[in-house]
View (tube, helix red, strand yellow):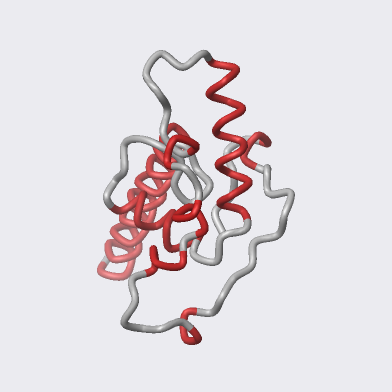
Length: 124
């Protein structure tokens, strides 16, 4: 599970109900089980010139929907791999996803440096 960069990401009042991947219909795409398919898209995407307080409230409501979604992890990974530039996906806003992606890039660089250093040490 990804660690939230700050406490505002910890909004899951309702525990997520996960359905193991092996129990799902393997032919159906993950998004067919998404809880947000039943909600209005406006909850997950900002209208233009939305006031900050309204945006924060809307994002928290969207995150509560995500928290009870059985495919939240798949949704989040989709948004990180695409990367999706707008909206709440997998319980993360676009800004929060940028933080996660930056952390992943840093971690990958650190791993590459460590691997390179280990090869040099082993060869020398």
